[in-house]
Length: 397
Image (cartoon, rainbow, N blue to C red; front, side, top):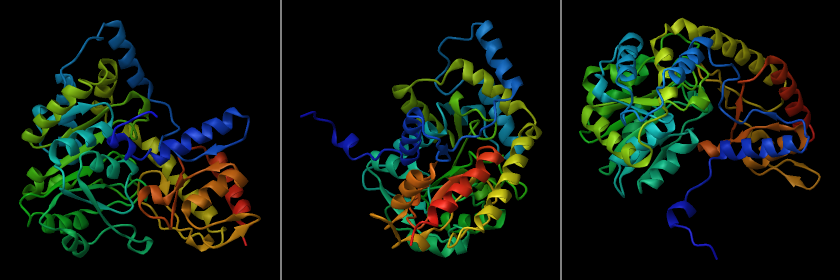
Protein backbone atom coordinates (compact mmCIF):
# COMPACT_ATOMS: atom_id res chain seq x y z
CA UNK A 1 0.00 0.00 0.00
CA UNK A 2 1.35 3.43 -0.93
CA UNK A 3 1.69 5.63 2.14
CA UNK A 4 1.08 9.32 1.58
CA UNK A 5 1.05 12.09 4.15
CA UNK A 6 -2.15 12.95 5.99
CA UNK A 7 -1.62 16.44 4.59
CA UNK A 8 -2.07 15.35 0.99
CA UNK A 9 -4.73 12.75 1.78
CA UNK A 10 -6.84 15.39 3.50
CA UNK A 11 -6.39 17.90 0.66
CA UNK A 12 -9.28 18.09 -1.79
CA UNK A 13 -8.57 18.31 -5.50
CA UNK A 14 -9.52 21.61 -7.13
CA UNK A 15 -12.96 20.88 -8.55
CA UNK A 16 -12.57 23.47 -11.31
CA UNK A 17 -9.37 21.81 -12.47
CA UNK A 18 -10.92 18.36 -12.05
CA UNK A 19 -13.84 19.26 -14.31
CA UNK A 20 -11.49 20.84 -16.84
CA UNK A 21 -9.41 17.65 -16.82
CA UNK A 22 -12.53 15.52 -17.36
CA UNK A 23 -13.64 17.80 -20.21
CA UNK A 24 -10.29 17.46 -21.95
CA UNK A 25 -10.43 13.68 -21.60
CA UNK A 26 -13.89 13.59 -23.19
CA UNK A 27 -12.75 15.94 -25.97
CA UNK A 28 -9.78 13.63 -26.60
CA UNK A 29 -12.30 10.81 -27.07
CA UNK A 30 -13.92 12.84 -29.83
CA UNK A 31 -16.87 14.21 -27.87
CA UNK A 32 -18.10 17.72 -28.66
CA UNK A 33 -17.73 19.23 -25.17
CA UNK A 34 -18.15 22.94 -24.52
CA UNK A 35 -15.91 23.60 -21.52
CA UNK A 36 -17.22 26.42 -19.33
CA UNK A 37 -15.55 25.13 -16.18
CA UNK A 38 -12.29 27.05 -16.11
CA UNK A 39 -11.77 30.72 -15.27
CA UNK A 40 -9.69 31.74 -18.24
CA UNK A 41 -10.17 34.58 -20.72
CA UNK A 42 -10.42 33.30 -24.29
CA UNK A 43 -8.48 36.33 -25.58
CA UNK A 44 -4.83 36.27 -26.57
CA UNK A 45 -2.19 38.10 -24.56
CA UNK A 46 -1.74 41.59 -26.11
CA UNK A 47 1.09 41.80 -28.63
CA UNK A 48 3.04 44.49 -26.76
CA UNK A 49 3.30 42.16 -23.77
CA UNK A 50 4.44 39.23 -25.90
CA UNK A 51 7.07 41.46 -27.51
CA UNK A 52 8.45 42.30 -24.06
CA UNK A 53 8.89 38.58 -23.37
CA UNK A 54 10.67 38.01 -26.68
CA UNK A 55 12.95 40.94 -25.97
CA UNK A 56 13.72 39.54 -22.52
CA UNK A 57 14.82 36.25 -24.09
CA UNK A 58 16.96 38.03 -26.69
CA UNK A 59 18.55 40.12 -23.93
CA UNK A 60 19.32 36.98 -21.93
CA UNK A 61 17.17 37.88 -18.96
CA UNK A 62 17.08 34.19 -18.16
CA UNK A 63 18.77 33.91 -14.77
CA UNK A 64 17.48 33.81 -11.22
CA UNK A 65 15.88 37.04 -10.09
CA UNK A 66 15.45 38.27 -6.50
CA UNK A 67 12.89 36.10 -4.70
CA UNK A 68 10.26 38.87 -4.40
CA UNK A 69 10.68 39.84 -8.06
CA UNK A 70 12.75 42.02 -10.35
CA UNK A 71 13.16 45.44 -8.75
CA UNK A 72 11.91 47.31 -11.84
CA UNK A 73 8.76 45.15 -11.87
CA UNK A 74 8.07 45.79 -8.20
CA UNK A 75 8.51 49.51 -8.79
CA UNK A 76 6.09 49.30 -11.71
CA UNK A 77 3.55 47.46 -9.51
CA UNK A 78 4.03 50.12 -6.84
CA UNK A 79 3.20 52.79 -9.45
CA UNK A 80 0.20 50.75 -10.62
CA UNK A 81 -1.18 50.53 -7.07
CA UNK A 82 -0.88 54.33 -6.77
CA UNK A 83 -2.34 55.02 -10.23
CA UNK A 84 -5.28 52.61 -10.17
CA UNK A 85 -6.05 52.10 -6.48
CA UNK A 86 -4.57 55.13 -4.69
CA UNK A 87 -2.57 52.74 -2.52
CA UNK A 88 0.96 53.52 -1.34
CA UNK A 89 2.99 50.33 -1.41
CA UNK A 90 6.75 50.77 -1.64
CA UNK A 91 8.64 48.23 -3.78
CA UNK A 92 9.80 46.41 -0.64
CA UNK A 93 6.15 45.82 0.33
CA UNK A 94 5.52 43.89 -2.89
CA UNK A 95 6.18 40.20 -3.51
CA UNK A 96 5.77 38.77 -7.01
CA UNK A 97 4.80 35.09 -7.13
CA UNK A 98 3.99 32.29 -9.56
CA UNK A 99 0.36 33.35 -9.88
CA UNK A 100 -2.00 34.95 -7.36
CA UNK A 101 -2.74 31.43 -6.06
CA UNK A 102 0.81 31.26 -4.70
CA UNK A 103 0.48 34.81 -3.39
CA UNK A 104 -2.54 33.76 -1.32
CA UNK A 105 -0.85 30.57 -0.13
CA UNK A 106 2.25 32.53 0.93
CA UNK A 107 0.15 34.85 3.09
CA UNK A 108 -1.94 32.12 4.71
CA UNK A 109 1.05 29.88 5.41
CA UNK A 110 2.97 32.85 6.82
CA UNK A 111 0.24 34.10 9.14
CA UNK A 112 -2.05 31.24 10.19
CA UNK A 113 -1.22 28.93 13.09
CA UNK A 114 -2.96 25.65 13.93
CA UNK A 115 -6.37 26.41 15.40
CA UNK A 116 -6.59 29.97 14.04
CA UNK A 117 -9.98 30.71 12.51
CA UNK A 118 -10.21 32.24 9.04
CA UNK A 119 -13.50 33.74 7.88
CA UNK A 120 -14.51 33.00 4.30
CA UNK A 121 -17.75 34.39 2.80
CA UNK A 122 -19.76 31.93 0.69
CA UNK A 123 -19.45 31.54 -2.25
CA UNK A 124 -15.66 31.42 -2.22
CA UNK A 125 -12.92 30.59 -4.69
CA UNK A 126 -12.19 26.87 -4.46
CA UNK A 127 -8.61 27.07 -3.16
CA UNK A 128 -9.20 29.35 -0.14
CA UNK A 129 -10.57 26.60 2.09
CA UNK A 130 -7.97 23.96 1.22
CA UNK A 131 -5.07 26.39 1.68
CA UNK A 132 -6.37 27.36 5.12
CA UNK A 133 -6.63 23.67 6.03
CA UNK A 134 -3.10 23.11 4.73
CA UNK A 135 -1.93 25.73 7.24
CA UNK A 136 -3.92 23.84 9.92
CA UNK A 137 -6.25 26.80 10.29
CA UNK A 138 -9.99 26.43 10.71
CA UNK A 139 -12.13 27.81 7.86
CA UNK A 140 -15.31 29.45 9.14
CA UNK A 141 -17.76 30.23 6.37
CA UNK A 142 -20.29 33.06 6.26
CA UNK A 143 -23.34 32.21 4.12
CA UNK A 144 -24.89 34.58 1.60
CA UNK A 145 -27.80 34.24 -0.80
CA UNK A 146 -28.62 35.26 -4.33
CA UNK A 147 -31.02 37.81 -2.81
CA UNK A 148 -28.14 39.57 -1.01
CA UNK A 149 -26.21 39.51 -4.29
CA UNK A 150 -23.88 37.02 -2.58
CA UNK A 151 -22.42 39.70 -0.28
CA UNK A 152 -21.99 39.53 3.48
CA UNK A 153 -23.34 42.25 5.78
CA UNK A 154 -21.39 43.97 8.60
CA UNK A 155 -23.79 42.31 11.06
CA UNK A 156 -22.97 38.84 9.70
CA UNK A 157 -19.26 39.60 9.86
CA UNK A 158 -19.38 40.80 13.46
CA UNK A 159 -21.39 37.76 14.52
CA UNK A 160 -18.82 35.38 12.96
CA UNK A 161 -15.78 36.86 14.72
CA UNK A 162 -14.49 35.04 17.79
CA UNK A 163 -11.38 35.29 19.97
CA UNK A 164 -9.72 32.80 17.59
CA UNK A 165 -10.44 34.73 14.38
CA UNK A 166 -7.18 35.76 12.75
CA UNK A 167 -8.06 36.52 9.12
CA UNK A 168 -10.76 37.12 6.52
CA UNK A 169 -10.30 36.04 2.90
CA UNK A 170 -12.61 37.38 0.19
CA UNK A 171 -12.61 38.51 -3.42
CA UNK A 172 -14.04 41.55 -5.20
CA UNK A 173 -15.03 41.18 -8.00
CA UNK A 174 -15.91 37.74 -6.72
CA UNK A 175 -15.16 34.35 -8.21
CA UNK A 176 -17.66 32.61 -8.60
CA UNK A 177 -20.55 35.06 -8.15
CA UNK A 178 -19.26 38.09 -10.04
CA UNK A 179 -20.39 40.29 -7.14
CA UNK A 180 -18.53 43.57 -6.62
CA UNK A 181 -18.39 45.36 -3.27
CA UNK A 182 -18.97 49.11 -3.42
CA UNK A 183 -16.85 51.61 -1.51
CA UNK A 184 -19.63 52.09 1.06
CA UNK A 185 -20.01 48.33 1.54
CA UNK A 186 -16.27 47.92 2.05
CA UNK A 187 -16.21 50.83 4.51
CA UNK A 188 -19.01 49.22 6.54
CA UNK A 189 -17.04 45.96 6.74
CA UNK A 190 -13.83 47.84 7.58
CA UNK A 191 -15.59 49.58 10.48
CA UNK A 192 -16.23 46.14 11.98
CA UNK A 193 -12.79 44.67 11.27
CA UNK A 194 -10.87 47.55 12.81
CA UNK A 195 -12.45 46.81 16.20
CA UNK A 196 -10.35 43.61 16.42
CA UNK A 197 -6.60 44.36 16.66
CA UNK A 198 -5.38 40.92 15.53
CA UNK A 199 -7.67 40.57 12.54
CA UNK A 200 -6.19 40.77 9.03
CA UNK A 201 -7.74 40.61 5.57
CA UNK A 202 -6.66 39.07 2.29
CA UNK A 203 -8.41 41.15 -0.36
CA UNK A 204 -8.26 39.16 -3.60
CA UNK A 205 -8.64 41.70 -6.43
CA UNK A 206 -7.47 39.60 -9.39
CA UNK A 207 -10.63 40.49 -11.39
CA UNK A 208 -10.14 44.23 -10.83
CA UNK A 209 -10.24 45.18 -14.52
CA UNK A 210 -13.30 43.07 -15.33
CA UNK A 211 -15.74 45.40 -13.61
CA UNK A 212 -18.96 46.54 -15.31
CA UNK A 213 -20.16 48.95 -12.64
CA UNK A 214 -17.49 51.64 -12.65
CA UNK A 215 -14.39 52.15 -10.55
CA UNK A 216 -12.85 49.22 -8.69
CA UNK A 217 -12.62 49.79 -4.94
CA UNK A 218 -9.82 48.38 -2.77
CA UNK A 219 -10.29 47.63 0.92
CA UNK A 220 -6.84 49.00 1.79
CA UNK A 221 -7.82 52.50 0.58
CA UNK A 222 -9.16 53.39 4.04
CA UNK A 223 -6.23 54.81 6.02
CA UNK A 224 -7.25 53.05 9.22
CA UNK A 225 -7.32 49.67 7.40
CA UNK A 226 -4.07 49.96 5.45
CA UNK A 227 -1.95 48.03 7.99
CA UNK A 228 -4.52 45.22 8.20
CA UNK A 229 -4.96 44.40 4.50
CA UNK A 230 -2.95 42.24 2.14
CA UNK A 231 -3.98 43.23 -1.39
CA UNK A 232 -3.65 40.37 -3.88
CA UNK A 233 -3.63 40.93 -7.63
CA UNK A 234 -1.98 39.69 -10.80
CA UNK A 235 -1.98 39.85 -14.57
CA UNK A 236 -3.83 36.61 -15.41
CA UNK A 237 -7.40 37.82 -15.79
CA UNK A 238 -7.16 41.47 -16.83
CA UNK A 239 -4.46 40.93 -19.47
CA UNK A 240 -5.31 37.36 -20.60
CA UNK A 241 -2.01 36.09 -19.16
CA UNK A 242 -3.15 32.99 -17.26
CA UNK A 243 -0.29 30.79 -18.50
CA UNK A 244 2.38 33.37 -17.66
CA UNK A 245 1.79 32.71 -13.93
CA UNK A 246 2.41 36.10 -12.35
CA UNK A 247 0.59 37.29 -9.23
CA UNK A 248 1.62 39.73 -6.54
CA UNK A 249 0.78 41.21 -3.17
CA UNK A 250 1.01 44.65 -1.63
CA UNK A 251 1.21 44.36 2.15
CA UNK A 252 2.66 45.78 5.36
CA UNK A 253 6.41 45.23 5.12
CA UNK A 254 6.59 42.61 7.89
CA UNK A 255 4.04 40.49 6.03
CA UNK A 256 5.80 40.98 2.69
CA UNK A 257 9.08 39.92 4.33
CA UNK A 258 7.43 36.77 5.71
CA UNK A 259 6.01 35.91 2.28
CA UNK A 260 9.43 36.40 0.68
CA UNK A 261 10.90 34.00 3.25
CA UNK A 262 8.16 31.43 2.59
CA UNK A 263 8.50 31.70 -1.18
CA UNK A 264 12.28 31.44 -0.92
CA UNK A 265 11.90 27.89 0.36
CA UNK A 266 9.20 26.79 -2.09
CA UNK A 267 9.87 28.22 -5.54
CA UNK A 268 12.22 31.18 -5.23
CA UNK A 269 11.29 33.77 -7.84
CA UNK A 270 8.77 33.55 -10.66
CA UNK A 271 9.94 33.18 -14.26
CA UNK A 272 12.26 36.03 -15.26
CA UNK A 273 10.72 36.20 -18.75
CA UNK A 274 7.15 36.25 -17.44
CA UNK A 275 8.15 39.00 -15.01
CA UNK A 276 9.43 41.17 -17.86
CA UNK A 277 6.18 40.63 -19.75
CA UNK A 278 4.17 41.47 -16.63
CA UNK A 279 6.14 44.69 -16.22
CA UNK A 280 4.85 45.92 -19.58
CA UNK A 281 1.32 44.93 -18.60
CA UNK A 282 1.21 46.82 -15.30
CA UNK A 283 2.92 49.87 -16.83
CA UNK A 284 0.27 50.11 -19.54
CA UNK A 285 -2.75 52.34 -19.26
CA UNK A 286 -5.92 50.60 -18.09
CA UNK A 287 -7.52 51.30 -21.47
CA UNK A 288 -5.72 48.26 -22.94
CA UNK A 289 -8.06 46.12 -20.82
CA UNK A 290 -11.28 47.84 -21.91
CA UNK A 291 -11.91 45.81 -25.07
CA UNK A 292 -11.89 42.55 -23.14
CA UNK A 293 -13.99 44.03 -20.30
CA UNK A 294 -16.60 45.32 -22.74
CA UNK A 295 -16.75 41.96 -24.53
CA UNK A 296 -17.37 40.20 -21.21
CA UNK A 297 -20.07 42.73 -20.33
CA UNK A 298 -21.85 42.02 -23.61
CA UNK A 299 -21.55 38.25 -23.09
CA UNK A 300 -22.92 38.54 -19.56
CA UNK A 301 -26.04 40.27 -20.83
CA UNK A 302 -26.41 37.72 -23.62
CA UNK A 303 -26.22 34.76 -21.21
CA UNK A 304 -28.53 36.33 -18.63
CA UNK A 305 -31.18 36.87 -21.30
CA UNK A 306 -30.82 33.30 -22.58
CA UNK A 307 -31.02 31.87 -19.06
CA UNK A 308 -34.41 33.54 -18.55
CA UNK A 309 -35.78 30.87 -20.90
CA UNK A 310 -34.69 28.02 -18.61
CA UNK A 311 -37.42 27.13 -16.09
CA UNK A 312 -36.41 27.37 -12.44
CA UNK A 313 -32.97 28.89 -13.04
CA UNK A 314 -32.58 31.92 -10.78
CA UNK A 315 -29.81 34.46 -11.43
CA UNK A 316 -28.51 37.70 -9.99
CA UNK A 317 -26.84 40.36 -12.15
CA UNK A 318 -23.08 40.05 -11.54
CA UNK A 319 -21.15 43.32 -11.81
CA UNK A 320 -17.75 41.84 -12.58
CA UNK A 321 -15.53 38.85 -13.41
CA UNK A 322 -16.86 36.48 -16.09
CA UNK A 323 -19.13 34.12 -14.20
CA UNK A 324 -22.81 33.62 -13.54
CA UNK A 325 -23.70 31.63 -10.42
CA UNK A 326 -27.33 30.61 -10.91
CA UNK A 327 -29.43 28.92 -8.24
CA UNK A 328 -30.53 25.58 -9.70
CA UNK A 329 -32.12 23.99 -6.61
CA UNK A 330 -35.41 23.87 -8.54
CA UNK A 331 -34.08 20.68 -10.19
CA UNK A 332 -33.26 18.85 -6.96
CA UNK A 333 -35.48 15.82 -6.53
CA UNK A 334 -36.10 15.45 -10.28
CA UNK A 335 -35.11 12.41 -12.30
CA UNK A 336 -34.37 11.15 -15.80
CA UNK A 337 -34.30 7.40 -16.21
CA UNK A 338 -32.03 6.03 -13.50
CA UNK A 339 -30.49 9.44 -12.77
CA UNK A 340 -31.76 11.25 -9.66
CA UNK A 341 -30.67 14.82 -8.99
CA UNK A 342 -29.90 15.37 -5.31
CA UNK A 343 -27.36 18.20 -5.45
CA UNK A 344 -25.32 20.50 -7.68
CA UNK A 345 -22.72 17.82 -8.43
CA UNK A 346 -25.44 15.49 -9.73
CA UNK A 347 -26.76 18.29 -11.91
CA UNK A 348 -23.40 19.29 -13.40
CA UNK A 349 -22.61 15.65 -14.19
CA UNK A 350 -26.07 15.28 -15.79
CA UNK A 351 -25.52 18.41 -17.92
CA UNK A 352 -22.10 17.06 -18.96
CA UNK A 353 -23.56 13.67 -19.91
CA UNK A 354 -26.77 14.86 -21.57
CA UNK A 355 -25.76 18.31 -22.84
CA UNK A 356 -21.99 18.01 -23.39
CA UNK A 357 -21.40 21.22 -21.42
CA UNK A 358 -18.86 21.28 -18.57
CA UNK A 359 -19.73 23.48 -15.58
CA UNK A 360 -18.59 23.45 -11.95
CA UNK A 361 -20.90 22.42 -9.12
CA UNK A 362 -21.69 25.04 -6.51
CA UNK A 363 -20.53 22.89 -3.61
CA UNK A 364 -16.96 23.54 -4.82
CA UNK A 365 -17.58 27.16 -3.86
CA UNK A 366 -19.55 26.44 -0.69
CA UNK A 367 -23.08 26.81 -2.09
CA UNK A 368 -24.65 23.53 -3.19
CA UNK A 369 -27.76 25.29 -4.53
CA UNK A 370 -25.79 26.83 -7.40
CA UNK A 371 -23.54 26.04 -10.35
CA UNK A 372 -20.79 28.18 -11.88
CA UNK A 373 -21.13 29.12 -15.53
CA UNK A 374 -18.07 30.82 -17.07
CA UNK A 375 -18.88 33.02 -20.06
CA UNK A 376 -15.22 33.42 -21.05
CA UNK A 377 -15.81 32.02 -24.51
CA UNK A 378 -17.30 33.13 -27.83
CA UNK A 379 -20.90 34.33 -28.18
CA UNK A 380 -21.64 31.47 -30.59
CA UNK A 381 -20.48 28.88 -28.05
CA UNK A 382 -22.40 30.61 -25.26
CA UNK A 383 -25.63 30.52 -27.29
CA UNK A 384 -25.05 26.85 -28.10
CA UNK A 385 -24.15 25.95 -24.50
CA UNK A 386 -27.29 27.54 -22.99
CA UNK A 387 -29.36 25.78 -25.68
CA UNK A 388 -27.80 22.44 -24.74
CA UNK A 389 -28.31 23.08 -21.00
CA UNK A 390 -31.94 24.01 -21.56
CA UNK A 391 -32.59 20.86 -23.60
CA UNK A 392 -30.83 18.64 -21.06
CA UNK A 393 -32.70 20.10 -18.07
CA UNK A 394 -36.02 19.72 -19.89
CA UNK A 395 -35.54 15.94 -19.63
CA UNK A 396 -35.72 16.08 -15.83
CA UNK A 397 -39.17 15.40 -14.40
